[in-house]
Length: 77
Image 1: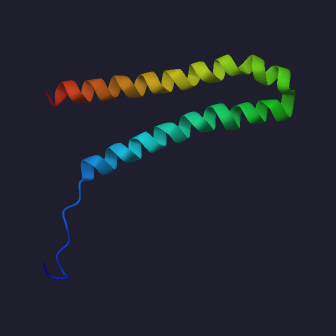
Image 2: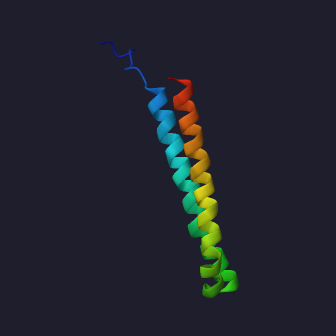
């Protein structure tokens, strides 16, 4: 193999990894940073009151992602 040749890149695997990392980052940002800001501004009791809303928002994001994954697999079938 010449020094000019490179091994093939698996762009599908790279795209899936990037999508998963972005999904995890957005959920963590919503729950941890959002909850932390609510706790700092309004107090810990209000943070606990807002936690179900934050978790339901994270669940909605995860549900939409899973729906798109199922649709993608169904199309590629």
